[in-house]
Length: 530
Image (cartoon, rainbow, N blue to C red; front, side, top):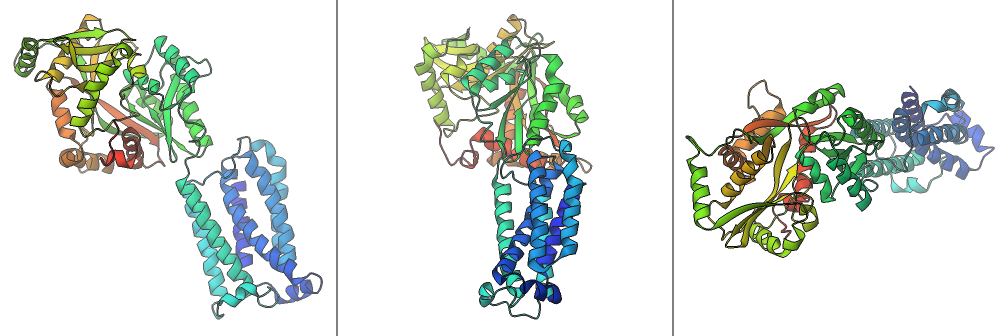
């Protein structure tokens, strides 16, 4: 209610500033006040009106700072209304709003931030109001020549000069507010990469977790911020890009704390004027995000191989058997090293990684995928393939926790001069290792945009995604990636993105792609990062 009242009060002040004053009142005022004071009051009233439009957004969000600022601006606006033309009706309306607002301090409990950017909906509303006021002023002074001399003419001489100055200032203020709001990333500066202490807490939570997906270990890359539950047993890893707070997966840690942590993350993003986005979540979280009122869209499918049932025997597995036999004939051997094994082998692993990056145009990924970093690789088991004692391929294995324990292959690198089919060999042996360790499944990673339906009644998001999957081979090998993983006969499990209904999901997915690629140069292949 007070947000609406503040917005209407600001619009009233702007309408008054953009239109001629009552001549008799202005004549009476000019006999008691200097022209400069009247002119400055006219300008201050228009600025106060604009500030009320901006502050209405803070009142809508129950900001304590907006409450106090609105009181000051309303009282100051009442004074300026009297000094610019004895507009006592306008002053009375502003005082009435201030008197109603004053006893309601307890309703405004949220902390405030200096120069908080406006949401797109509020920004559009403010722009419409300002344009309407400017049009009203142009209509009111439609018979006047708006020359540059009016900038230096006092209001009591020609009222239209006040409209020229105030209208120009109002337009500039609107442009500044729009630029700051559209370019801002609320909370990004204070929610950057996690500290070493937070990473240690997250590692402890993962080691004691009763619920976590393998991707939860991506928090240990150090490129994300971490939000912990009050107990510290659970966390969400996320990045802030623009107005979107993008969580990589769901909560990890204690199963009993997951739902509360989802709400806490959404409320934290909302308190900064942002929107929570959950990327690459599984079916187990759909009920919770639906309860939160989020929109959900499928973004791809992950290849999950049942470790107990996997075999290289039978029809359709000839290519896998051939890769195994050929690799071992050429002297290949497989081993899974325990955590902490990467650092002693760092230089040898780096040579393999650099050779692979050079073969694939040298582009490292981030956020949703691991990168080559010996400290990161030290945290989890490391699968290596050797040929005559020399490492020719490796992959780190992320471990999940839950009723059905899963593992996932994260960073995969191989040397171009390794045995033919070495990656097939590495994948097969990793799956067999998972079975020997008693794991339920091995996750071979997601095939983006796979499984989206191009049907008439499907959402536009799904139809466009299906089209990109079919025709976007030049940009990214979507079909080739899925076809490669299909040779291991996995069960394809859907992955989703979830966000508030007001959040454009295609833009959220683009933000994920930019975070994973390191920005536009990385996404477009314009920068090599080795």
